[in-house]
Image (cartoon, rainbow, N blue to C red; front, side, top):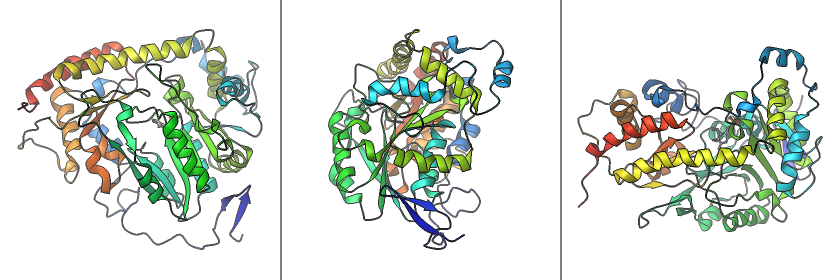
Length: 446
Ligand SMILES: Cc1ncc(COP(=O)(O)O)c(C=O)c1O
């Protein structure tokens, strides 16, 4: 088979081997295969996961222990699986794509074609990966706003893409109670990051890890740039069901001229607190969904049918249970448990308007110089040490935020630790009790 580029309505679809021949030689800077890389900051899958396994107690429970919608429980999961053993079978009469269509049409303000504009994937991750497989040519640049969900990086580089990092700037110094709105894009910087090789912008709102819900104005400005430079947009909206304080969740695909160039990513794992289901979905125009389906078919063939059915049932029945509004209220209560303890300690944090993360400013944490840190933290930022210290001394785990930045910008992240509040209230109260002990490790204010 010879290589070549195929064009799908203006966007080239990658065919392997590419007409450019072999991928460029390894530049020695970044790889995600531990053991083959001379880089100082080995990354996922070994990076964060290794850190958690080695250090973090996560309040003695798994990372997410919030019960999914109990009304979605089934008495005999084995029977359900047996009845749904083929991808196209839907004995309950609910087709996942139809449920997705019905759930999202109002939000998108358009009718969605179940055959060509919706793709069910094995989690948001696989959906995003498949988009990169379908669209990235070697050397294509992808704009990632930092801090970024760590999975984007290997998904881009595994497919020959080149990540280009544009940091959100925390303008929190003079703000006593910062929120996600205080993390801002410098739009001139974004423009400067665009080159003739830029193919795509990845936007994530509500944002992991900042909890920022991008404003309409910000999203319009991103959209204008995408249109001006003819870029694809991957809009990761997996936390769209978790928006607090009456903030508006704006879907970039609904802005003028954006539907054609945007693929929007969702996750049953996030919508129903069921991350183990591994079901997600993409919504976009046929010109993006069709090549992505071609890629996804070769990666996983299709998503497992019993859990597609569970996700479909969730979307179909959510309204009658007032599920999303109730869930948001419950998460807001969980958020308050964490933020109250940080308020009581006098520590600064970024109040999230969406998602389930709080960024704690750890700059006034006084970590003893002679603390016995393990070798694995050598060369890592101060935030890694702070997270280790809190895990060992308090028994509460958090994620060092420099992990969500490229090397050049990781100093921005080093001032923060990310705490997750996707836990039940008992666990969060227990964590809050333990966090109170931080008081002895805070630098005295002048
Ligand atoms: C921003 C963001 N996008 C995508 C995902 C992946 O979602 P899924 O579990 O459906 O693959 C996550 C999971 O943490 C996330 O935080």
